Structure formats: structure tokens, C-alpha cells
Image 1 (cartoon, rainbow, N blue to C red):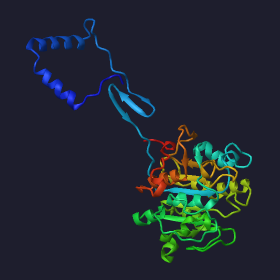
Image 2 (image 1 turned 135 degrees about the vertical axis):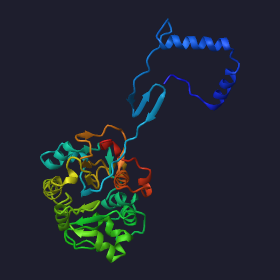
Image 3 (image 1 turned 180 degrees about the vertical axis):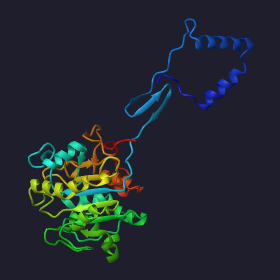
Image 4 (image 1 turned 90 degrees about the horizontal axis):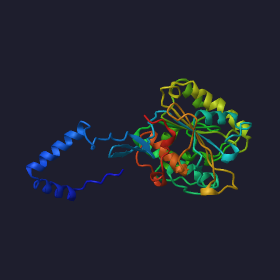
Length: 340
């Protein structure tokens, strides 16, 4: 700030110039430097400016470094999906989402977050593969593409999908109140093409309670409520009550989600109301909560986040590099975490 940058060409020229100084000139310089050092005369020194932070850049004197926020590593990332609800229908709506609004107050709220598509299915694939893949909610295609599932399997990161209304290892279609389009893992070849792998990673939701109680949660948990419990068919109040009783309260008692723990809970919405098509899928209100999430934080940046950013962020938290497809270049959501 105010100083000229040093470069090699200037430096070589100045070194040549030094050789031309006379001994008397050098003595004069030394005398002047001594005067400045002891504060004498009209040329008394001025102190360097103190370090400060402006727009994420720390400066001390002429040195400058840009500090980039990072996503903390976690061995306990839990994501639960809600359905088809716009930001304005959730945030501040304490009569219908009292528990989720309490979680917003205790956690962090991205205020510039938008879904990628209408209808649902493309958003679920963006959250797991970094691609929309399809916008056909009735698609039965099993996709052989790079994904967070593939990365976790290859890297040995433990994970489970906990879904209401299905049995262990189920990779079939809609059944009862379960919609397979809300479970993208069942449509990825790394899981769907292997009974053994499916049995390892796809579980009925009843197992979540067991794993929480005995401290057996995997590093990544993906929760799929049925359509009565995710605000798809049921009321927002029913979804909010289910979320509090079955996810938030059980996790709150676990060491990973207490002070000093590393737990991260993400409550995300797949898409906004169909009438909102901004950025593809409309304005939604994901919430992040946990010991390393900034408490009471509302987004300060003007960054536009979408589901590919959430995928990027979750993979960073799990220590997985090189996010797939659009997630690779999407901004990580590191601003919502405590920086250590």
C-alpha cells in the first residue's frame, strides 16, 4: 500500500549503482540512518502501520497476505433433506417451523442459496454428483458417473443412507411413502449394481436411532424422510416436529455435537415453490449447525451458493479432494464455519 514493488531488473540496476557510491557517501548514509534510528532531527522515524484486516487481507507494513476461510474436517456430517419450500416460507416463520428457526438462531444461515432445478430429482443429483443428470422425476436410470458415493467408497470414508419406508439394501422404485427420486444414492451404479455395497450403505431410518445411541454414526449420514415427514405431502409443522424429535434432539446429546466436537448437521431443501425459478430451482434456506459452525451467523458475502457448493463443502469436510463436475468450481461455503 503506497510502496513500490521490487523486481529483479530494478534490483540488478540498483546493485550496480551501489558499486559507484564513494566511501564518503556511504559514511553520510550511515550518519543519516543513525539519526533516524535514535529519533533525532527533522527526519525522525514514523512507526509502521499496525496489522489490520480489510476484505480478508492482512497487512503489516508492506507485507500483504490474503486469508481464505476453510471448511473444518469432520467425522460426523449429517444431512437431512426437506422438500419444496421457499426461503420466505421458512425463515422467520416460527408458527410453522419453530424448531428449524431455533436451529437457524443457533447455527448459520446462507441467505443467497438457490436450488438448481425444478422438479426435485435434478437437485438431488446435483447434491451428490455435481450434475443435474435428468429433470424427469420418473426416471429409473442407474447412472455410472463420478459422485460423492464413489469417492467415499474408494477413499474408505464410512457412510449410510437412512431412509424411511424401506428395508436394508433397497434400491428399487417408489414404495409406500418412500420416493426413490429423494434417494439419489439408490440410482448410482456404485451402489445400485452391487447387493453387497447396497447392504452396507442403504438402511431403514430406524437404524439411525440405534447408531446415534451407541455412537456408531458413520462419517457421512444422508437422511431421507418419507413424503409425510419432509413437507412434500405433510404440513410444515409435521416436518418440523419430525425433524426435531428424530434428528436434532438425538444429535444434541452426542459428544460430536457438543463443545469440542466436530459434528456438522445440514438441513437442506431440494427446491423452492415451483413459481420461483431463480437460478433454476428458486431461493431456499439450508441451515448448518454444530460446534464448528458460526452460531447465529447470517451470510455476509454476496456469493451465490447452490447445491454444487453444498457438495463441494461436504466433500471438503470429509477430506475428499477434487469434487466432481460443477462442484469442482463451485464456491465452498467456508464462511459459515469457525476459523481456527
